[in-house]
Image 1 (cartoon, rainbow, N blue to C red):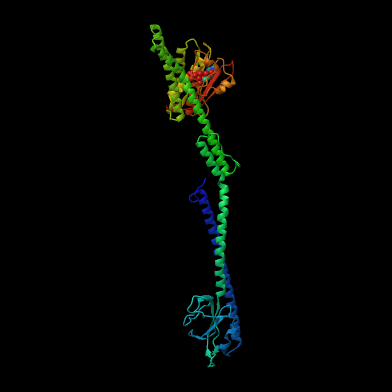
Image 2: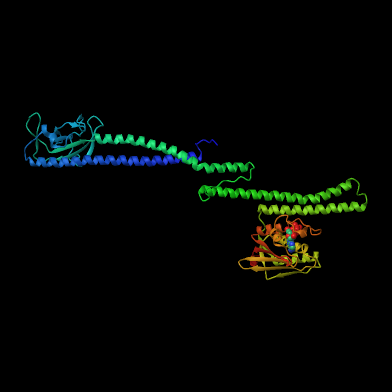
Length: 482
Ligand SMILES: Nc1ncnc2c1ncn2[C@@H]1O[C@H](COP(=O)(O)OP(=O)(O)OP(=O)(O)O)[C@@H](O)[C@H]1O
Ligand SMILES: [Mg+2]
């Protein structure tokens, strides 16, 4: 996909790399240029100091003999400038100034008069009437009785200070040349970084582009596409694996939803078909006899009631799925179990149902929903076991602030495959399909959702021919709080 570099991640990364490289190279360039300039200045200073020492030795060895202005330049290294000053700082005699190539250059621009102590340590001064060349200059005393004989042959004049200067033209040329060379080399290196960096980033970013293409394909409906993860432990590999897990989860949840909608439609279709059948019988005047007319109305009412119950259960599951907050108050589980058992006994008087509550047992949650958990478990024990099979309800506190509610029956129990699936929505065991036991298969799914919404869990212990025990564990509430 063509995309502008400006504003793209690649463009910004490349700009960052180039900027960092430019800063690094500029720092190296500046450090090397400053170092070179300091070194060259230091070389000039050492030459000046040596020249001063040899001049002072020469002057000391000559006693009172005057120095000749014509041979002044022989006192210092070739090309250096020399000026002799009297006590007031006026120039009495001086040489010409020369560049490294021997050509004459403007003399150093000394102050007039030159103050005492001028250039005691080497300093840089510019040329007279020009900025270049610059000179490194050093001033020093030449003894109390030193004189100079002017080139004109006039009488010797007393001098007290000598100033010598050496041109920095060569050093400056070297530095300027290096500035140019560094600039060209830096620009070339930055161009190479930009070109190589562009290629490296293009290769490095390819997995991200592949991810975007896969995500787009999935968004367009090709749910089976997945990102190819070449190196799962690299950063990009981890992102790819995480996205694949997210795509898997989305696909599973969509499949579950589709299944749920299909099951719900199927569940509602049977009573609707029955209702339509009886209604058409009525409409076509086939239910003339009062007996048949009444029967059709009764069946319509029964089926509508079943549909109503199913729709209520679906709504409840949808609400629990949405994670709507439940009531959060202490619920007396013992009292709840006693009431639910009394109701169950009234519905099925021929069945022994016992309840065992050990002490005060309080759970935190929604009383009506927890009542529903008990109702569903008791109705299952009644509906899926033969008439007269005993059922026991036990409520007790567990360590670590948990409470337990167990419903045990001594019915036929379940095979492991059935036991594994009973909490699925719309799952019904074979026994449930026989007439008289028919439910929608949502009872235990609702038990599971309500329990989990309370921060608890539900489990079943069962084996064929050995009955079943459903155990609900919930967070406890302290009785003192109620
Ligand atoms: N105590 C039990 N003994 C044996 N089988 C049971 C027991 N409780 C549940 N089952 C099996 O688990 C299946 C699922 O139970 P669930 O309560 O979810 O649905 P249902 O009872 O069939 O319908 P309803 O939605 O009306 O409750 C039942 O169809 C039944 O086969
Ligand atoms: Mg049930």
